[in-house]
Length: 583
Image (cartoon, rainbow, N blue to C red):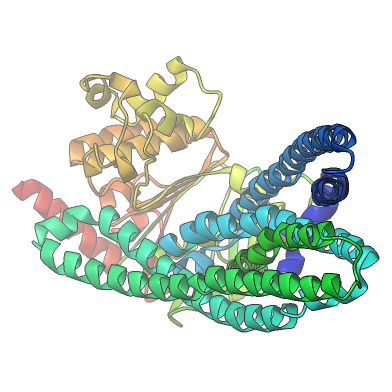
């Protein structure tokens, strides 16, 4: 139960619903006790007056029936209200917990998402939260119902006959021990099943996301075999869990049956010996024992729900207790103008121990453009992720407007940056909404304007639904170049003071690239712009160019300065110029 203590804050939040449900439960149990009592009275009336005073017996029976009918209706109504308060409370907690997990996911850093698979994240926020809801709802409700009914019924039974009550409850220690042993197995098997389910979800998510690659390499049969093996393992674990669950029902019925036999035999002998006054008491006790049948039977179900919920909450707690590597050290608003400075910055990726940057220093004035060129793996993209504070530097310092980046409000920082990533990611939504992602209140006119500047407007209007065209997952409906240009339009519409372009023109032809770059020069006159590229054509108009190699700056200067000296830039320029002439 240690893991489930995390949920106590929600019980406190919904304490009024909880205590109201508790009150309804108590009242429902009290009214349900009238039925055995008046049935016992009816049997005693028949036994005593059926022959001596039949008119009185009929009148008494009718009165008892009316009392039983009225109290049963009231008990049913109170039970309905109990469910309406406690089960509805569980739905509120489920809603809150899902939002808490989702919001926490958003706060976690890039490194967290490198370590964990998407399918596992999805499984925890769906399957695990659902298991937890079964604890805060049905498990809590039936637990309250069971303990209150036990308490009330046993008090009534004891007041009638302490000795017969003791006989009736003899099987309970055996019941408690059996529940304890079976629950331990359920907890263990439930944890294994949930872990396997996460693996299965991750596999399915990756398979459907990469279906084009699977088909291209004709690996459908291989993947089907892998999936079959995972589902077989999942089935085996689920069957093992189900088999353990199945012990509860027969065990409960057996123990309740034993209790009934004990009542009939012991009660009958006590009646024969004159220790109980009438036969109706035995009937009353049988009804009381059967009133305990469902609560006792539900103990197994409740116990298994609690065990499964604890296993799921433990998995949720693992993530909820994970602190983001990137902390927001201030809640004060931060205004960003756009000056960027790197002072002896080095950075090493924790997961691979690759030193991406080594003692890098440069400065970009507000409103100026910096181009970064270099071979693959030289650290170009890393610079952009550090500016967005998706990672923190290992050593050295990054300054924005001469203030340490760590002293800025991270939300204001990122809100002041428009990023076009190397791998353009588009959502399964309309093209219009994908562009509006950069500015939610953008007008249709603004959307069309930035689409034109990103040289994608003509492509969009040729689609049957135009800007309302719904894209497939990750924008699969569009070509690589179209996805990049929609992503650029999304960055343009944000109108942020800092614009970061990570090799975002690699999939477009040189003519389109030139058109976009010309538009970019007009848009970025008041913006600080950093362009990462492999092409000199993307970098030549920048105010400053730096060349990276193995995480170090090996050249820097303007285009005119760099083509005058021997080195990487001049070689790249001559090579690409020659390729262009040949083309």
